[in-house]
Image (cartoon, rainbow, N blue to C red):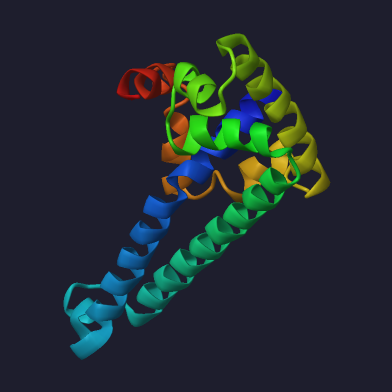
Length: 164
């Protein structure tokens, strides 16, 4: 379960910049529709509009909290291990590219990656981000859920490796 949770959290983390931009755009769109009561002409009550805006802000705040938790957890790892996770998940590098970047063998790159996930999972636990908390708090955001659903189709790592 550690492996899956780490993969899921890191995939969500790698998607956060786009997710945050999407939340900002959604909020701005709703804010703009409030001017001159355009939302009312579209059949959306002011209460519904404000509720949507609050929900967007809550999802954005949760996403920012997730980013902070992941960054904090990554800083607890030795540099080569955190770098391996960032290169793989955030930068989309292959294991061959990670080995070259870190000037190690491919086997060492795999070992570092596995060890990094173990330590990362322990750091997440210490920070209170258990699998249940992640599911209940973050997978309720449709954008985060969509990002991590890519793991379920089995093509995420293959596509990342081929895009390298």
